[in-house]
Image 1 (cartoon, rainbow, N blue to C red):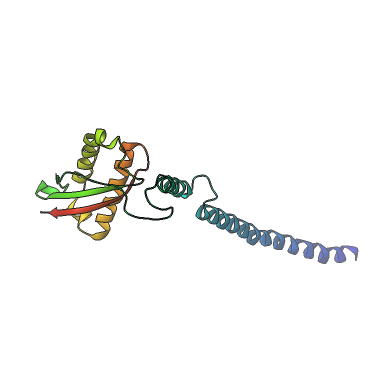
Image 2 (cartoon, one colour):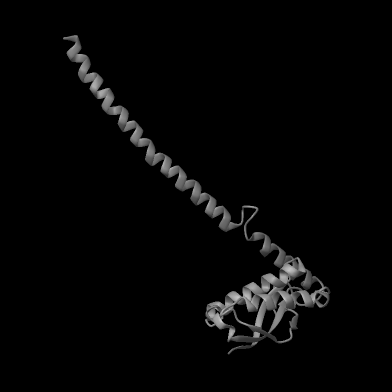
Length: 178
C-alpha cells in the first residue's frame, strides 16, 4: 500500500516540473523586451556614445561660437554663408546614355563664413559631385524624394572632402534632366 501512495505524489511532482520550465519562458521574453526597449530609449535620448547627440552638440557649438563673435544672437537661426558652385552637366546612368542632367546649386555652411579651405578643395569637391551625379539614373532623380536624397549625398560628399561637418544645406537653383 505504500507503493500506491507514492505513485500519486510522484505523478504530482512530475506534473509540476514541466509547468516550472514553461513559466520561465515568459519571464525571459519579458527581460529581453525590457532590455531592447531600454536600449532603444537610451539611443533615442542620446545617452549612448554613438548616438546622434554628437552631431547636435557640434552644430550647437558652431552656432554658439558664431553668436559670441557678434554674427547674430545665440539661438538665432538665420541663413549661413552660401557658396554658389558652377553648373554641373553629367550623363545619367540610364541604358543607352541618352539622358543628361544639368544642375546648379549653392552650398550653405555652418558658422559665420565659408571655411577657408573650401576654395583650395573645389577641384576635389567638383570631381566627387560629378561622379555622384553621373552615377544617378533618371528614376533616381525624377521624384521629390530622389532630389532630397541627392541633397543629402551632396552634403555627405562635401563634408567628406572637408573632413568635418561644415555643410548645413544644399539648394538647387537649376535642375534640368533631358
